[in-house]
Image (cartoon, rainbow, N blue to C red; front, top):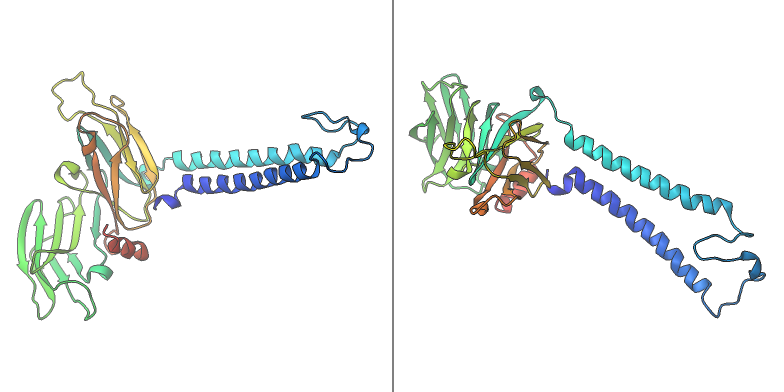
Length: 328
């Protein structure tokens, strides 16, 4: 969902179209009238009967249908544009129920972002671009690293399996282009990650499970990771990093996704917080910024949001490959 797809950008395009059309008609008629009625042009016969006054139609000779149109058509246009604007507010501010959305709490601190997961997420890099596919069923992990002759990556050689912070390294059978590991059982309540590297330790592929309760932080260089093609609800809170002073409730932040054209304030002391909703449909990595000056290290309030495909699903492949080529 890049910025050109957002509801506000669509409204901008519609308003711009009608503004240009009305401007062309208005200025077109103005120039025609200037040429037709300028000084030196043959005067209209019986000019005295028009009683022309600035800002009013001629008293004795006028076109009723044209006069009505001058009032009715602009009124219809203004009412229609107002309805479009109100409809956009409904689309933006209608908050879906928690059962229908993927929910994350975003906490703005001084000076970094924290992401608290209220739903679990299992995701994997797109195998169509990495030529690596991970399958973890029960107590068996298989990593298929088959790379066609025309693929553009180095040969996969190593796999790291991390479960609840404990990592174990494995070597891939280069002849079979595959790794099978048994005896490691998947636990939905534990943070698990499988990463695949080449001989030079370049990361080729990531498979990850984020359980409910996972906390990621930009202070540690971590990204906010959310699934594509799902309705997303972010509950936004501003809280102090140091809670030793109960009277201090933090500072104002604004969570801003500039490429998507969405932003929402984080208000200190507001227990319920604020809410941002959106529906990402493009895979890739997008920047996060703070749009509200929040203190001396305001410039550190930056991060990234990764739009990923849930495990065994796919996102917009064309968008994904385009962004990979652009260095996202």
